[in-house]
Image (cartoon, rainbow, N blue to C red; front, side, top):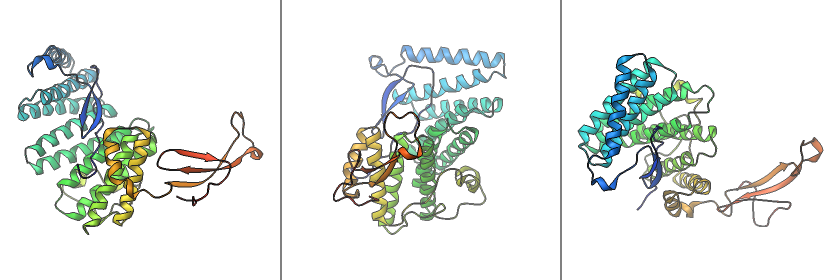
Length: 358
């Protein structure tokens, strides 16, 4: 495979047992198990989902103001749509299930407008609908669905006042913008979408530095920008890389409104193809070091030759002696560090052949 593969998005959370599946070569945990013995027919799990859906429907009918009933009903419908995809049910039927799930999320949102999980899972359902539209060749509808998904992720992020529960939404928001970029005809708009995604992934990493999926996804964006720069279509830049739409449907569905830019990560990126490829390689390398995945390793093999040598970064740090309960001004010691392609190294003396700064 030539090119850097896109990593998986962050799926919905639910109350069913999880199992492993793959999307874009990345192992992810879903809420849905498969039953190979059924040969694609309805299994006991399918019937259990039907019963759960009926129970939640009855609860919602008995009390239309029951948030939990509507939200849980939407989760079950979403799981049924995932199950339908795995068993090969007609895409139109899957889309109808997702439409029903979105309607239930809308009702749940009306009942509890600050529910981050409602908005987040609603965004995932809209993204699933966008993929169905794209697979059917309807690019206009696919783009519209991705735009709506962006809006739900944006709303989820805005509801997270403490900034502790929205890293997954930021990651999925970035991926949705990346998908929208692929559907744009205007090269400037494509670059704008990609740079907006850069900001969302950076903010996800800032909120959770160990979130390797966002680190990898940021690398894929840099790689995409490098390919565009190599074709003379523009690479990165500052402030979003171009003007955004001021009116019409994009003003609310592109997920990159100017009021949220400053708080959601820098959208700047290098401008040359070589610099962008190096940035892509560094992010992918960091993702592989943080959480090894087959897709990370395969992508790293493709871009490894662009990593800066002999180290990604090098310099000095002030550290306190280990085991010291309270560090005072006189106890700090200067130690050198080198972050190379294999590990993070520290020592008392400066290594030969390494230039500070990387």
